[in-house]
Length: 203
Ligand code: UDP
Image (tube, rainbow, N blue to C red; front, side, top):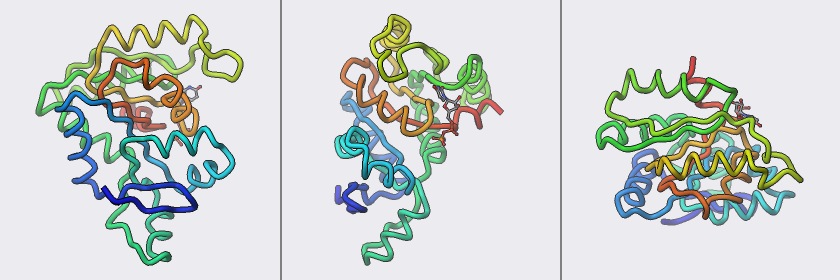
């Protein structure tokens, strides 16, 4: 899949359909697929945050979630077809999960938010199996607290649920750095940072 380089950050030249196809291909092959949905702000932050840059560079799919990235692609004469926002991509992944009865886990948000989002999503997509939810305010998220037992318990919770898709809603760039740190330990097929999208689903 060809990439567009914006300020040294590689963005996949995907539209919504090809982004979903790539995720589905990984899901059906049982390969891990780490999805990143950067906007211009994240691309700027990656300039002086090597961990964030490394995360984006190593992700299996990096979609252009930001009109600024689409505008930049036009300026450099390699126009991207369209903006692929995280929330729209999440919706398409949910649609696929419903059609194919996949297991989904939502982690992040204030206590109760992920559960409420799962309930609302289930009304629209009844064949998704929500295999778990967890809030995003456990100990371990802050520098110096990594590997705290609360954080390990969240990872155990996710791993025992064995989701096909794990949505991580900690906001950017916290979720990207968290996924980078734990992707190899997580027993989930597709891992995607979704920021405040779960708040939207929770209503
Ligand atoms: N959040 C969290 N744990 C934290 C910090 C934030 O679970 O330690 C959640 C917060 O409750 C909200 C989301 O992360 O649901 C961040 O949403 P925001 O709209 O700020 O993120 P963005 O979409 O802009 O990346």
